[in-house]
Every structure is written in C-alpha cells, then in structure tokens.
Amino acid sequence: MSTARATPPPRQKPWRSQRAFDPTRPTLAGLVGRYLLLIFVVIISIGPFLWQLSTSFKGVNENIYSFPPHLIPQEFSIDAYRRVAHVVPIFRYAWHSVIVAAVCVVGNVVLASLAGYALTCMKFRGKKVVMGILLSVLLLPGEVTLTSQYLIVKSMGLANTLAGVAIPGVVGAINVLLMATACRAVPPSVLDAATVDGANTWSKICRIVWPNIKGMASVVAVFSFIGAWDDFLWPLVVLNDPEKYTLTVGMQYLSSTMSTDPREVASGTVIALIPIVIIFASMQKVFFRGVEGGGVKG
Image (tube, rainbow, N blue to C red; front, side, top):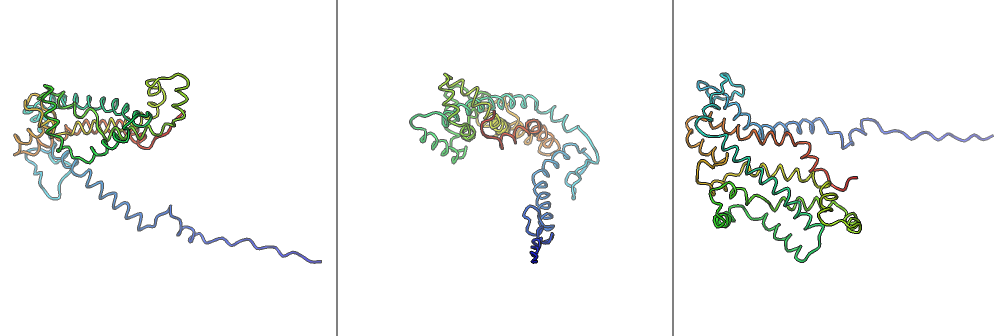
C-alpha cells in the first residue's frame, strides 16, 4: 500500500524582508529627512509672517532687532495699530481693495466660466487660434502691456478711478484655461443628450456644466481675490489721488511716512494680510476639493 507524500507548504518570506521592500513604509532616515524638509519649508514660508506679527505687537521700548529674535513680545502693546489708523485711512483703503477684489472675483468666475465652456464644448472657427493667443498671453509679463492698458483705460475716462483699477483684472487668461480644463471633464454625450431634449446653451451651462465646474470656480475665485488684493503696480499707475488708493498703495505710503518705526509698517502689513487669511481659511476645503475634483456627478 503506497502512501502519497504530503507536499510541504511554501516557505513564507521573513517579515523583515517583506518590510524592507515595502515602498509604502519609508526608512527611519527617510522619515527624518522628510520632517526636516517640512520644518525648513514651514520656517521659510511662515517665519516672516510670524516675525511681522510679533513686531506689530512689540512696545516702543523693546528691541525688535535682537538676536535670536523673540517671537513672543516681552512688552505687549497695540499702540502701533492705533497710530496706523490715526495717520493713514487704512480702513478706507481696505474698503477700496475689497471693491476692486469683489469686481475681479465676480468677473473672473462668470466670464472665465463662459469662455471655458465656449472653448471646450462649442465648435467654431478659429478655436485653436484663440487657444494659442491665450497661451501666448501667459508668456508675457504684465509690465509689457502696462502702457497699452493705461492708454485704453484713460481713453475710456476711467483713469484715477477704482473702475479703471478693476477692469483689466475682470478676466484672466489663466482662469479661462482653468475653467476650460474643468469643462473638458463634462462628457460630450451628456451635452448632446441635453440638446436632443431641447435644452439651449444657457440651460446646459446652468444645469449640467456649472454643477461640475463650481469646484474649479472656487479655485478661480480665490486666485482672483488674492491677485486683485495684492496688486500694487497697476493701482499705483492708475490712481493719483491719495483718497482713492487701494490698500497696497496705501501701505507704500505708510512705509514712506513711517520709515523710522517698523512697528507701524508691520501693523499695516498684518492688517493687509487678514482678509487673505480669512478668505483662504474659510474656503480651504472647497479650494482643495476644486483642485482635486472633476468629472460629472450624479
């Protein structure tokens, strides 16, 4: 009577060897290197802001140039903010910047969405030419078209006005391309089916395209707000009346009149950064969802 020999089970690889070749688990040296790089990036990006914030709250008797710097003020004071509000109408300048930024945000969201839909979902002659022009505009620095923009705004009678500051930023080429990329994720078959059902262009934009590109629209809104709020050169060229300055131009005026005391300059800088921090913090989830999102839902 013959007996069959049992086949031994395959030998398992040692646990250490499996872990050594696991790409999802970094080594100790790699993990330390990542955290060191992260700390270095945080210091470079957030360090100047923390130093400005600390300087704005330091008293007049405290040395702001001590080394190593003291991020926590030893003599806490808000007198610098009071002096800034007394010398420069900073809140009026901030309101002017809010008006310009709001116009730019609304214009970019609406016009860039319509232009992106036209470039992606509609057929017309010269589409490639228009796309090439938009791409070529991105290669030109803003200083190249500064003179021509000013002449156009002046010929329209909008020089030295907030409308003249806002009009050139109402729509940007990069925002049109972003919205075109978002519209490209909408399947043409869905739009064709809507056309067969009798939907016009406006109905397709509102009911099909917009629900799928509103995440990217939030990205465009944040970029437009930050760009309009931080713009300095164009408002400086257009505006010549100090009563109509935006916040960035007013900060330059503050820096020139209070150059002997950096505490006031730091206070004005912090005031100028507060709206950007609030906007980005409140729209952070929508912003990153818009960057990662795409495709038709539902």
